[in-house]
Length: 414
Image: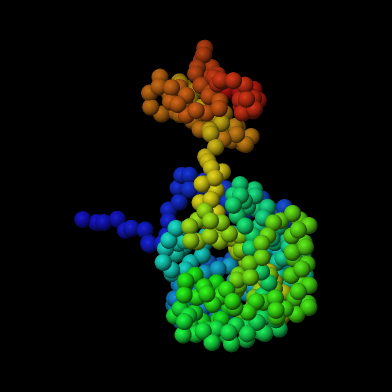
C-alpha cells in the first residue's frame, strides 16, 4: 500500500487564519516600504556558498552547522540562503547597483536554516528585510528604525514591544573593547560555560548575550563599550538617539546587545517582546560597514534589519488584527436560464473591485438559502421573468457595500 509522503520537519503548510495573518504582515510591509521609498528587489534563493561563508564567517553556527549546502552537477558548492543581507550585498557589487547609492531596498521571502524547530522558528522560514547601502550618516539608521517602528504600529502589535539599542563603536572602538573583553573573560575562563569558553578567543562579544546562568555573574561586570568609544563613535550614537527622540520613537539602552561578526559597526538594535516565550526578538538589525570588504568589494557603509514573518504573524493573530474579511456579494442563481447574466454580473462586480462569489449548483430551490448562510453583505438572486433574466438585490440594511453592488447592477444589461 502506498503511503503519502509527510511534510519535512521544520516546514509548514500555512492555511486559514494563519495564512491571513501572514498575508497581513507582507501587505503591511509592502505599504510601509513604499511610504519610505524603499525599492523592491527579488533575490535568488540560492547563491555560491562563498557568499555566505565569507560574509557570515566560517566559525559561526550558521555556516558550520545550519546551512543547507549542496554540490550542483557542475561541481560548484551552492547554498540555500540562510539570510538576505549577504545576497543583497553581493548583488550591489556584481550588478552595478553602486550607481544608485545611497540605495534603499526591501524584499521578503523564504530562508533556510537547519536548526531545531521550535515555536516561531522553522527550517524554512520567511523574513521581511530592509537595507540602506552606501549611506554613512546616522540618519540612515534613524530612518530604518522609524520605519520599523511604524511597521509594528500599523500591524497593530507595537504594544509590549520595546526597541533595545546599543552601539558597537567604529572599528577602532570595537577592537579596543574586544581586547578588554578577552582579557577580562580569560581571568574567569574556568567558571564560564562550555560555549562561552569556546567563544572566548574567536568571538568574545557573543559571551555578553549568553543565556547560560553560569555566565551571568561575569557578563554583568564585563567591560562596557562606552569606556572605549572614540569621539566620532560617541557622536554617531548620539545622533541616532536624538533622531529617534525627535521622531517620537521610544528606545532603551541595552549594553549587552551585541553582534558577533566583525563587520558590524555602530548601531545594533532589536525590537523585543515577552509574548513569544524565550524567542523574544521580533525584528533586529544593525550597521554592517565592513561586510562589502569581506565580499571582495570596497569599503561601503550599510545598515539594515530583518524580521521573521512567522513571528510577526503570531503576534498579529494573537492581537486579532487579521481575519478573513466578510464576503461582499453572493450571487444565487435560482433559475439556470439566468446563469449567463449572473456570470456577466459576477465579472462586472469583480472588475469594480467588489469581491463576489456565486452559487449555481445543487437544487435551484436551495441556492438562495445557501446564499443567506454565507453572511454576505449583499445577496443578489437571479431569476427569469417573462423570458428575461432579472437580478434582484436582496440584502439587509443599506451599507456602502450594498450601494456599490447596486451601482454595478444598474449598469448591467441581460
